[in-house]
Length: 240
Ligand SMILES: Nc1ncnc2c1ncn2[C@@H]1O[C@H](COP(=O)(O)OP(=O)(O)O)[C@@H](O)[C@H]1O
Ligand SMILES: [Mg+2]
Image 1 (cartoon, protein in one colour):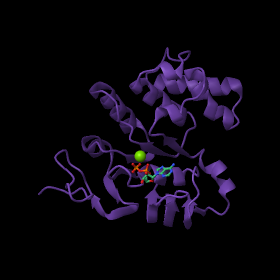
Image 2: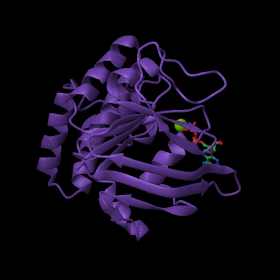
Image 3: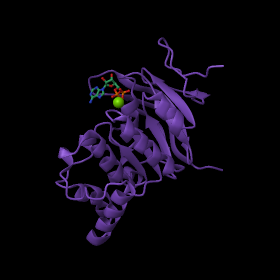
């Protein structure tokens, strides 16, 4: 039996002074699943990821991780080590003066020695084809390079699952293909927010839809290259 990585029950969230961004979300995400998340801008996708990572506290609802109910927000400390978030904006992920330090930061924070953290960082960078980037200043990298370095910072923590928030945005065709190859080569469960349906078709097994804070998982659609979303509905569908 695959283990549930994340279980959300009736999760709602309202930004202070704002409107309801998440409306009674139910989601069970199992180990081994590779799921796409589609939905118009403002439908709550990023908010959902931030709730899962403990960056925001739900207004109501219950969460469990790896089968353990979350009782105390402090428990997120152990969870965020097991679930990696690739931020929608790479500048939110990179804050050190060098690429090597950014990638070593996670392992260091998890208790690795400085030597060990640097070894892990170098290995992760090499795995992603980023040898030679160690001493570069993250904020001077191109969009595609930032995306890969961000991915390195997440993978260096050996997560059991990944959340990727619009990872192909701003990538050229070649870099996008490289990202697809990297993701295909990972033995990891992931949830990916993307508007890029051809991308989702290549790297996910099913796609869920969000609209106005609601999550629709009942249509477990297998995307094909020719799939499109209706202009009047958030649900992707299969052509016959
Ligand atoms: N920090 C914030 N403060 C107030 N409202 C926010 C904040 N971030 C997002 N929102 C609002 O919450 C809703 C969902 O946003 P978001 O989760 O970013 O959507 P998506 O990622 O699907 O584009 C939108 O209406 C957005 O304007
Ligand atoms: Mg977003």
